[in-house]
Image (cartoon, rainbow, N blue to C red; front, top):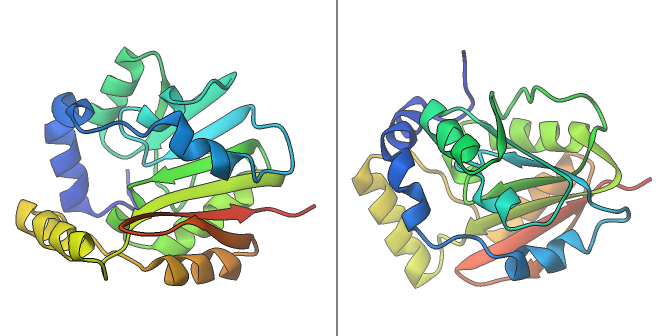
Length: 193
């Protein structure tokens, strides 16, 4: 199976899958303001590059599915009761306009073709649905440290500023806003009716 996630990054995530949940989890309170920007109820959530499913596990939604390229991460997600599908983020195995929210949390910088990934997110969102991207600003002191650390660890990460990511979200046809700035920032895209 081809994968949009850089090959070396997939291998690393596969090896560290059992340890991944030792890192701080994304909390609902961090995601709630972004999800509230949806123009519809959020019941079906797709967590792209979602690893062990920390993102959807933080939410109280009827349907949450992780799409990830690393089999070890998906096994961990399933162990936590989260449905997982091995897939390519630039060719999501999901129908057009079939989900209310797409999460890409701490993952887009690991993907080889981020614009294609965002385009797929726009395709699978229902009108009124929301894309939530949580990323790290490489221009901050902490961001520069993270870039250095990820590259030293062997990741082939490519980071974006919040403004650059918002521009990419607009380019795929979603309205874009930046509700949270700083080292860890959030960009939200809404698919208008």
